[in-house]
Image 1 (cartoon, rainbow, N blue to C red):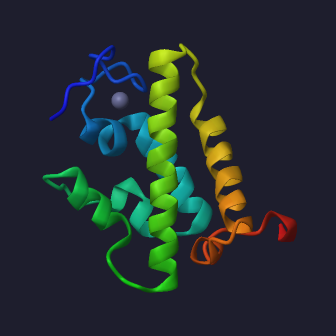
Image 2: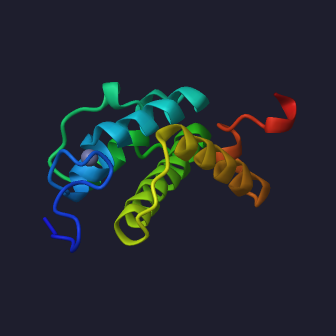
Image 3: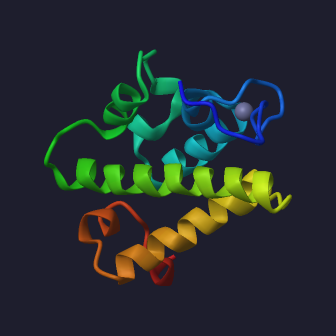
Length: 135
Ligand SMILES: [Zn+2]
């Protein structure tokens, strides 16, 4: 496992050693984000309570939405990329800028970003994401 500088402990929960596997899939803070996003779009694969133990981060990531070419699976994969990217950005903000957002705030930003991706043409993601103008 790669060792990252400046963060012996996970910058999200401050409890566990920081590894990629912990940061993205095991951290209690990250799991709260995944759970919220899962219930937002109704995609059970993104809900941590449905995850199986995996040996590698790659296996974990593939398990989130599978390899199906269905629209919803493809949309879930796009959303999974957005969530991991958001967790990584938050990790870096905490490590390098000493700035910290709440889980609720992060989830709102993920929703906003997902809507932007839809407006930019992410059709399969749009099949998952509720259009805010219709809410
Ligand atoms: Zn953590």
